[in-house]
Image (cartoon, rainbow, N blue to C red; front, side, top):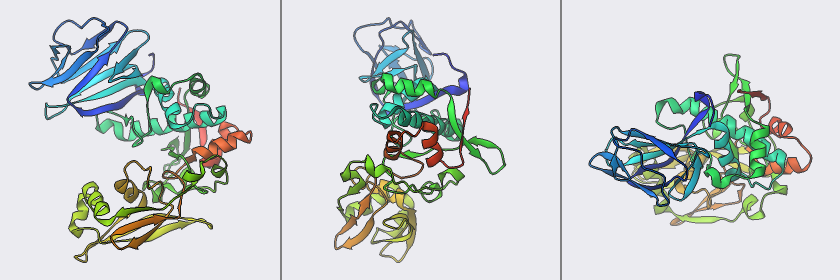
Length: 376
């Protein structure tokens, strides 16, 4: 657990919870506890909130924050899942709930990401490309958003999936170790080279998308490239997906819940695509206009609409589809690909690796104009 402070990652594991169960096999210390640290035990330690304080194993915290530090092998188990590093518990302002945050060095963090984001049995060069992209993305998000909150990234696909020790394997650790410290950089508007958000998704469907049309940011390596590769690896039902039908009332309710500003429309009566990226044999919706019965309108990026309607992203798999009105339902058809399609296409990376492309060649293809530098 030896890393400079700027390379420790704060991962939000659980938020706004009232209870949790903690097990640590090795000796450990707890900072911020009023009484002696509990001894290691075969039984889980119960964590809860009571009378405005975090209580662990019956002992109240003397501050709104606890840091639990296991000794070697530096592993703790929270609610059944193993993680490396330290556990930080933070009392929320309402004093009725707390957040659980994993403090972990960058490389062990990545070992818990790579196997969660890509099958660990995939080609070594694909895994290495994934490691560099994930490392770059993590450091960018930490720098961009971390200073304004108590954590840097979540453990979910809202950032990148992190499963801790459960996602590790020898192949994953090999990819992490062989790329240790390697990140992608590009020329910024000020002329200097720096990291950028190296997004990636599962299946682009034949062409990656310009980040400005999905996330609203603009970096040269994220302009989008043709991808003739992912179809060779992707499961057919994910490359081309069946149409889905959703009730208009449900779609409207989900959109208004996710975006309160849309309540000015009253409810969503019509959805009209206004912009799309055309790639010859398919297109991807990028901007959607919404209409209310009162004549008012608003718009959303198509990707935001997709995830508001289906937060899992597993039914409405991408914005590369068509929308049609079917009485009391919306029909999403001619679907293609899985995910937002910006940056690295994971199935495309695997296909390129099978064709003997190196990780560096894969990254140069999906992030054109980028370079690899080492942060250490």
